Figure 1 (cartoon, helix red, strand yellow):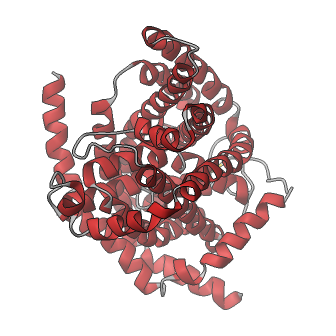
Figure 2 (figure 1 turned 45 degrees about the horizontal axis):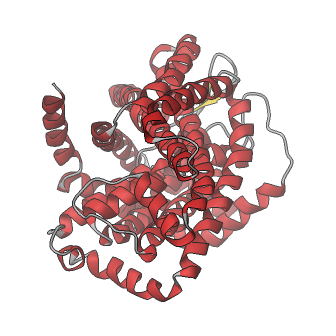
Figure 3 (figure 1 turned 135 degrees about the vertical axis):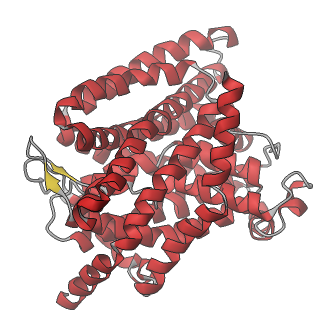
Amino acid sequence: MLHTIETINSVINGFVWGIPAMVCILGVGLYLSLRTGFIQFRKLGYSIKMTLGKILSQSEAGEGSLTPFQAVCTALASTVGTGNIAGVAGAIAIGGPGAVFWMWISAFLGMCSKFAEVILAVHFREKNEQGDWVGGPMYYIRNGLGKNWKWLAGLYAVLGVLTVFGTGNATQANTIVTAVNSALLSYNVIETTQTGTVSLIVGILIAFLVALVLLGGIKRIGKVTEALVPFMALLYVVLGCGVILMNLSHVPAVFASIFYGAFNPAAVTGGVVGTMFTCLTKGVSRGIFSNEAGLGTGSIAHATADTNDAVAQGLYGIFEVFADTIIICTLTATTILVSGTPVTYGQAAGAELTISGFVATYGGWVTLFTAIALVCFAFSTILGWGLYGTRCLEFLFGSKVNKPFMIAYSLVAIVGATMDLGLLWDIADTFNGLMAIPNLVGLFLLSPVVFRLINDFFTKK
C-alpha cells in the first residue's frame, strides 16, 4: 500500500515540480517584479525599517484583528520553521550546495509575489460571523475574479485543508521530537530505547499546547507569535553566526561551491547530483516550502491586520521572505557546509543534518540550544498553519467547523511525533506545489489590481 502511494505521489510530484511549475512560479514572480520595477529591492530598506520599528510599538489592534506587526509575526511563525532547518538540509543533500543558489533566486522573485499576495488579501478581505477579518487566496480569487472563478477559490481551500496536517503539523512535530531526543541523548538523560516513549510524551504535550493557543482565538495566536518569533530568530541567528565566525576560512570555498554547484552540481557532489534541473527544482521547492511565496498562505495571516492600507501591509511581506530565506535559510546552509559535517549526497536528510553542523563546531552541549531553537521554530509553524487550515475550512463550511477542526488538528501532532515521516515529507512537497497553482493563476489575473493599488499608494505618499 505504502509503495503504491509513494509511486503515485512520485508521478504527481514530478509533474507539479516539473518544467511547467518552474515556469509558473518563477515566471509570475519575474512578471510582477518587472511590472513593479523590482519593488522588492527598491523598498527593501523601507520594509525592514518599518517592520523592525514596530517591535517597539505597543499599539493594540481592534476587535477581531491583529496589529500589523502581530500579523507579520504570525505569518513568519508559519514560514520560519522546519523549512529553514530540515528543508534546507534536504535541499542540499538531494540537490547539492547549488540548490541554495536557486533558493535565493526563488526568494528574490518570491518577495514580490508575497508582496502582491498580501496586498490582494487585505484589499479583498471580509468579516466573518464572529467579526474577525478573514482573507487570503480563496477570498481574493472569489471576490476579485467573480463567481465564475469560485471553483478555483474552493479548490485552493480544499488543498489548503489537506496540506496543513502534513506540512503544517506532522512534519513540524517530528522535527521537535528529533531535536528533543538529540539533546537528551547527548546529555545521557535517556537511552536510545527510550526515545519512543519520549516522543509520545512530547507529542501529547505539543497537542495540548497547540489546542490551548488555537482555541484562544486570533488574539491569543498573535500574542504568542509576537513573543516567540523575535526570540527564536535571534537565538538561531546568534548560533549560526557563531559557526560561521569559527569557520571563517571555509566561507569563501562554501560560497564558491554554492554558485558553481548551481550550474555544475556533479562537479561539487562527486557526480551524485547529475543534473542542474534536479538542483534547481530542489532549491525552488524547498525555498517555497520555507518562505511560502507563491503559496498564498502567509497572506491569510496578513489579512487579519488592523490596517486600512493594503500596500503598507504588503511591504511587511517583502521583509518576511527576506528574513526567512535570505537570512535564516542562508545561515542554515552555511552552518552545514562550513562545519565540515559529512553530507551524503543523493540521500534524504532533515533536521539531524543541521544539528550535526552545530555539534561539529560547538560540541555536544549545543544540542540543548539547538533543541530550544528547533522547538520554537516548529511549534510556531504549527500555530501559523493551524490558522491557515481554520480559514480554509471556514471558507468552505462556515465558522461552525472551526473548533472541531482545531481539536483534530492539534491531535495530529501526536501522530507526527511518533511515526517515521519519510514519505510524508514527499507528500507535503506535492501538496505545496498543488496549492501554488490556483494561487498563481489568481495572482496573475488580479495583477492589474495590484499595480493600481501600488501606484495609488506611492502617488499619495
